[in-house]
Length: 131
Image: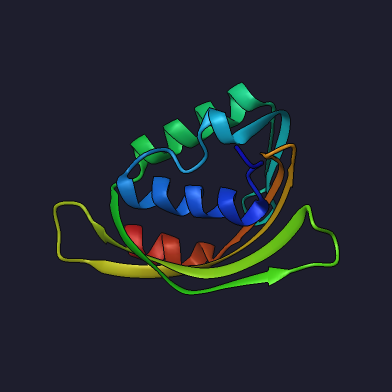
């Protein structure tokens, strides 16, 4: 079986999000993975901690995600790294409130697993949608 590329891992992330699962599952993460969310001032290290953070985040977010829009994948000179831009669209559960927010992710994969994930979120759009 061929090794998963950064694009493959991003596609799995998209599938997980749209299926209602935790966005980053343990199988796609390296043991020493680092996830950074600079705008949230959060850094999480290690497969178990990141997988738990993703599970908790999904469980606490009252949104049914429906689609990724305007997805652009930028290939870099480093074959381990891609930069993705996208808008994530969802509906607040129990309402008709539909919203979207922009994201940029820098993903580094090695050995078919994510070793570094840096995510920039439109936190103002997310906060507005949740209020």
